[in-house]
Length: 328
Picture 1 (cartoon, rainbow, N blue to C red):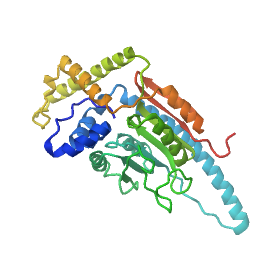
Picture 2 (cartoon, rainbow, N blue to C red):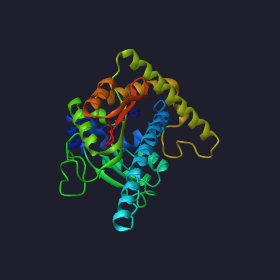
Picture 3 (cartoon, rainbow, N blue to C red):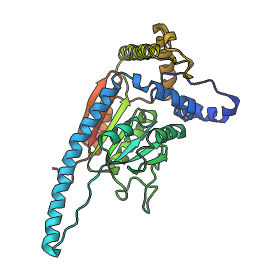
Picture 4 (cartoon, helix red, strand yellow):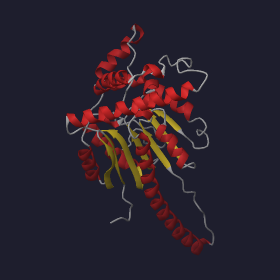
């Protein structure tokens, strides 16, 4: 995940957690206040909406192809059943998706909006994030059979599944997914683990299933990082300006709502200082890899249609499709 808010100073009560965070900086997102801070600034990530729009467009394209093939297979099966038994059974075709490092559920929420009959599994290693996701998605939970799981995908057995082989997600049985997505999460694990995780994702997908990773990737030069930093500052500043404008027409200010930081106080220099500080803090938890290398790993595993579908400086949307069983 990307941070643009400073984490509060640790207290004595949190001393044991702080020791763990020294070993694994990504554990900082298990703090409720840090989780909330990330959620508050996520929409200021440059072109975040466009990235998610692109993600949905890709999912829709390949999922339609997959459904069409499933429908053809069903028709063939129904014809065979009718010839043999004189009756047919029609199966419901639905989408089942997995959100890795789900945070408070922004990708899951969009998937549910676009595919209202879908079913989802949300995995995150931060209980505060999962709690936020449960709250925000409670209107969908029962209808869409949402499964919220506390899991650490830096380890091999991060996903709980039904059946006799719950701990081995490398196997090809049990629950499969039509879509697997991740947003600003996988960059926290070492490159060797990224590669094995991508293999596990491939195994978890149905034939024709789509994997899309919206991710923080390695920059080729420090100049590109500087350009992104400027873009992030612009995006944050514009967001605060908009909030200030809206709050001025409201009877209650941001400060009155408990934010403690009136938008008017966020002048450009303060925003720049905050972005510089928080990007440096987040850097401790980042293990970045070039998007080109990660796309090559996906190709080596067997993904088709692999590409970087969207990129703005150090942010990239990339992924691929597990080939259909009858694909050449």
